Length: 274
Image 1: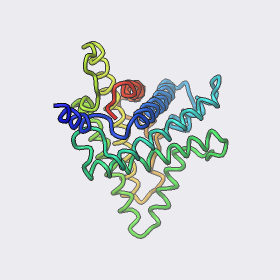
Image 2 (image 1 turned 90 degrees about the vertical axis):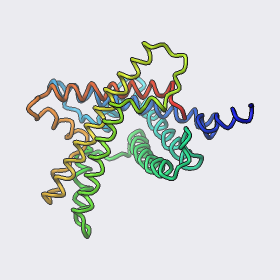
Image 3 (image 1 turned 180 degrees about the horizontal axis):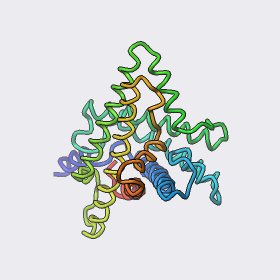
Image 4 (image 1 turned 45 degrees about the horizontal axis):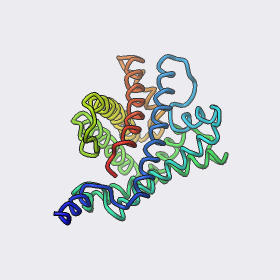
């Protein structure tokens, strides 16, 4: 009996030990901070009350202007390093859950490791005062322009844009279907708390997926039109929601959703199986 329980715990519980548990939860807290700040900045844009960039750079600038802002920015950077290490541990040891050892899971974890590594580097560079002063929108257009100059560049750009769009749709659909529940260890938690976490996960996940899908669609448009200027970073993508027939109220909903996702990250920091 003891051996069977141990094997079951190994399949469904945390892999990689206490260190992995700590870095994962620290990373989720840091990710939540960024999403909440981006959501707040987007909300200001929707009401015409803010000229800041509603993206990671704008969020870091907002954080840096607060009391102990320099320390907080460094803390977020370290948190993103923790996210990178957590995902790297999933490549090495496998993810939590019965199918965590699958090659597909390790490949996804590897991609996330690279993503969070790049994010952590940019945040730490900002904290050290050596980060790029250019906006995320400008960087997106420049990268797209350089990519389109490569052999078959527009096709590659279009493929990446399509993948991001599809990924955004998948994120939104999985959130709406509450697929995140299988990653949460909430035994013994009250129904009220469960419903709150569901609300945060659904609302936040759908909004996050919408932003990804829209950004990918703009990238596809840039490839089809052979016009790198059509590529948009997070800030321009969010502002585009306000230019739809729904007006700024759609951006208000998306901004609120991003803040919900930030809170959901904090909930995952408490209950996520890692």
